[in-house]
Length: 386
Image 1: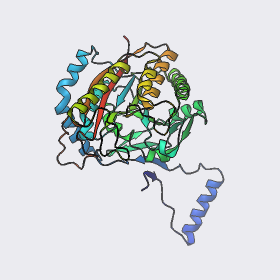
Image 2: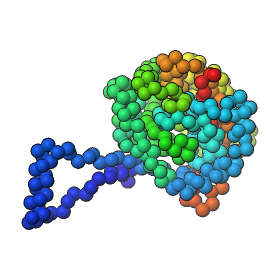
Image 3: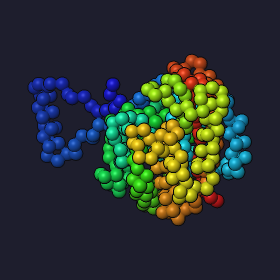
Image 4: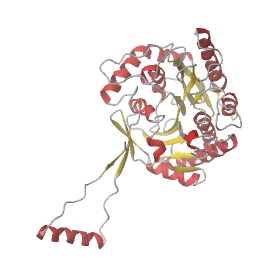
């Protein structure tokens, strides 16, 4: 299926007589110097429709269910963390899994989504199998249409980033974006919080740590230049939204090899898997974001030197999280802005949290959720020090 909608006029039918003469004359005027017709507009269409809203009405039901389940704790959690009610995220980690399982976690990030322009950093699930590595992947769309609403792309900012990064560090890979759901899943939640949001979508495939540091530094420098030119500040005007799920755990339904289950696939194993995720998030994503913080995350989840099997812990944000956090850290430094502090707002998983009720919608579930097959979800936001 073609996931690009190209909007433009159809080719004219064959004409005869005076009508043809008029049309030929119009073409002659155009050839003599009139502006050419506008290029067809490209709208990237939604690829994943199982477990995700496909219309505004369906998303409204999911949003209401998530609010009913979580809104009593959202404000309380922010207060317990000492977060000002107006504090905007400079960077945030948001899940990209099934809304019925992860919707509660999405909800906790919405109050801090304030910037109008967001650079999205996502997982490229198929890149490892395809041998795609070492460059940031952009798309060529003018807008993304998800859950029945369009979100415009900031084409000018995208062009500036591509030019600054150069062909050795970034490329347009629209086909990869059309087949990947890790960024589209974020958009209805972002648009609900920031109706006028504009985006620059980027996929982060596998790469070595030195390469990731180099790319993040160049991306941060390019974003800093864009901020200076536009008078933007990270947080109020520009944000980094990182797509990542936490651990993918279990001994069934994960394909050949049976998946990741070092603690077993019973209640004790589930509890230990959750505890490991929470320890990882609190140790490497919470608190002051220092330069080696993303490296500590990578040391715990990456398997060194094995691009064919890169996971020590199966977090589906293996590269997007450190790339986004290194970029955020260096962006603050480039602009002379305060350092960042991370806050773990909520952790959930597809077993412990009951699925949201979504009666009357077309949402299904992407996979079974049980002790043999479950996924963790973390909502983390970073704010600038006051």
